[in-house]
Picture (cartoon, rainbow, N blue to C red):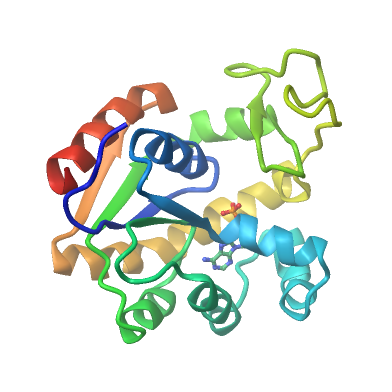
Length: 218
Ligand code: AMP
């Protein structure tokens, strides 16, 4: 539980399944003044509520494609915390135009965490991923199984697979990531705010990440 001495505007970048959501959740726990906004969760919530954006995004999401930049930027910019708030964006921006839309909106990103996890590890992780749709809680049958198979520990409700975790769809998501994220990182590298952290497990990455955030913003 540590305070931050200056506002952090953090972006989590990493292949799908690299553990962006897990690391974001751990940062929130360690630094309670941080808020988090996950583009995937925001989209899934809009799909579940069948909003106009949700209906338009659903087809892209279920095929593993990226939701178009203008739609995505509109959704995120409308949901951003106020400027004085420290926050983490998990899953946005994913493309260079999305990053540019943030800059145009006056958001000064000051820390980009690039999660570098081997693809073999990611594929294994996804094959074993189960989620609780109500809360977004993620379980992994190998690393963090639920107490009772197929059941959420807290609510006792059923766990499900994400439709886009299907292996073929997932391969498309990994390819899209490689194609789009290089140019995105280049933009932030020019600004000198990218920090790359490598590791095979989330537990290996977390202590390094907490230390780096404390060093930069503590
Ligand atoms: P995630 O939970 O971050 O893996 O996102 C799930 C899906 O939501 C992705 O496969 C995309 O279809 C869509 N999505 C999430 N974030 C973005 C984004 N920044 N730009 C475009 N599509 C996104």
